[in-house]
Image (cartoon, rainbow, N blue to C red):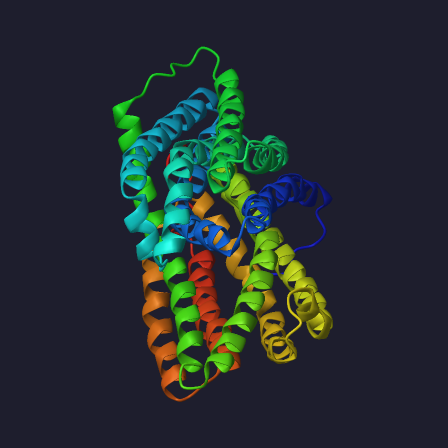
Length: 447
């Protein structure tokens, strides 16, 4: 794609949406970090139980991210087409779909809490703690999904500031309630689950209230045809998300296999360095994902307005910013690679391994910038089917190459080279190939 010239108005629009989106994204992991910090002082078993219960909850909610992404694209399209009423109606359908999925998922999670945390790898004492947390926290699945759907509606309406404010307030409230219930009321890990549930419920009510207030005169009753349409549109994005999560999972598994032939200390060192590298990679991904969220809203609105030229111009501009942010993030990561390990561990072996991995991550960041932004552009265009098929293709290429890397004795660094070159490189090819064509440039109120 050509390097765009300066466009201050376009830049202001991109960052007006991206900066609050980034702050809201950062608030999500802080929610879990706060819980971990508070529960961690109860004991190791309680902290481990929180960890396995968190895996279950994050897996469920992660599969439902389409409630935010799909709703953003659909609402933005109708807004761009001048159909504000239709945009809000579409948003209401998304909220009802979130409620439906939440109710269906919550009941088995509460009833099967103990088996679920055992499947996540917990032994009996840890499983007891995890199940105690999950039985209460699972009730918060519906509020969490409502938060996703309402956030998607507001992003589609070009408002990323409100979700940011609610996310920050929700985090502060979560910390206060956790401290009061865990230690003040003496409820232990159950108090943490209850505090998080209350914070999530209030945050969901706040976001839904904003959407409802904007929907003055529009029926709030569930429309089965609209809900079915929203569900069908979300299937492709679920497949896309599954391919991404599968890739991250097999990468971690590959790291554990490369170190399995060595002693336990060697394996622990490799996995620790991998976890730190992945944490930093995720932080940089949040910055790029914020631009992608802006891309969803801007692309959907422009296509709804029938302005393909504006979509092309905005895409070029956002890709350019993705590369700039990727380069900046890569340079900072490379420069800080000898120092960052000390923030996470005192183990000299882990820190030494980490430097090499971070340099590999740093080199790949500009490619990640293009990948994340184009992913957002195509989601905003409603091109979910291509993203799903592309994700399956990339996974089919990546897994065998990763397996070969492990079979040939490649260590931690080679796993990250394979991830950066093969997985991210294949995604780069798949997405840029699509972006250069015109098939995704479908204008009008519906994709």
